[in-house]
Image 1 (cartoon, rainbow, N blue to C red):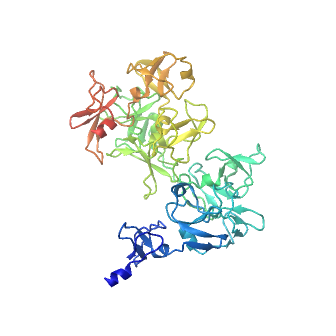
Image 2 (cartoon, rainbow, N blue to C red):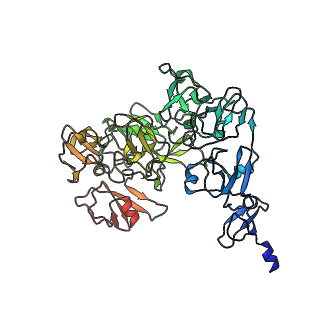
Image 3 (cartoon, rainbow, N blue to C red):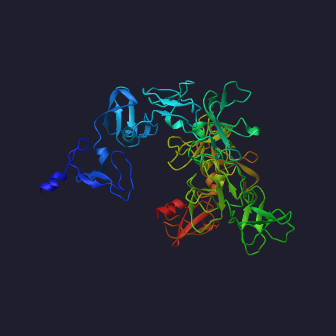
Length: 568
């Protein structure tokens, strides 16, 4: 009993007694770090509520004098809820996270527990982002960083240059010199402390990643090639995780990228595409190839998975009479490898497998081809429809260019479908007005063919001119015969014949699914069939007639959408 009582310790950082514990592989409840080690890492464990602490964290003094903050002592405390997500460390500039902090209640100076433990570096001789020696200034203050041009929300410790008077954030001292970003992959970008603006502007330029005005007295990245020397990117935008892969190319020679064509031209009418076992495809518009072409509405493009019957342009079909492989002409020309604006690594085009996949950009289930990251340890994948969106993007329903947002949006409403964004859907937005579109709406075909009208139907919606011209009149869908709300949804219309239809009546709720059998890794296998019979089946879940072009079948039960199938 005496030996057990001696092992219990009472420390001011926790209300219960603590016992010695090996913290190897365990997360500390104070610094929020996990240290993996083959040897024992000294720590403590509370056997009442079971948090663990590193020994040096638990024994941290409640008051601490710190060299970068000589005016006042710092107090140890757990972070407030708002600090974990919004506040930054005054020493290293990173987010505080959920760990304990040292703070000064008088002047808002606040640092990580781990930063307080490390002996502070007071000067740096050769920082990447500056030509002179930088010295840590001990008094925290709000200031504009000369490397990035931004000012942090709260006071932080500046690194100052006595020679030229510049002040930098700690994290901006080591900005890479030469980088390549996914928004401008053809050339490398070089960091300069004062970029040369275009001739039309005296002292400012516009960032090419997220268009906003920058000034030439602050650092930025510019293209090293003369033909696009005015391609300038703000240093924070250029080093975002979704834009830059983290590699500094300083001192490395630039090598040409490997380019592999997606198909081989056999003659002016026949090609051999890399993805098809029969190899030869024929342009459908050519009627002298000895191939009889007829469609019943069940055909879908083998690459993008969209229905063939809505297609406006040319298509390619397999020359084998017993093969139903069909491709849109635009899909045939998709590159084997490409760069994408929302991912820092190069992507490669892969043929579809047997399993259903979810796009990491639009969060839709799809069964077409996939652009997957070339890095084996990176799981990023995007369907070819979302991967074909570029920036700046001009959408048919909006007059201004759209740009991808830097973060996932959860507080905006899509201007197309009027649905609020969920956490895993990315969007593009207009910087001139309050207009946002998620990729589910951006990738809708701008024009479709409708069997009941000889004119192509054009995509509309988002509160544009067409809706304003209705003057309060009623719109009705030609397919479902239901009333439409053109100011609250997207639609297809023809001005020539005054035809209007719902988007989902033409494409369905699951437009990237095509007829066939699917293997879902989380559910039972199911089948997708064309809904083209005279009598529309009744959905097992919503108990209504299935109005969409395809239906889902599982265990002899029918469902109108993939969502209904998942609910069952």
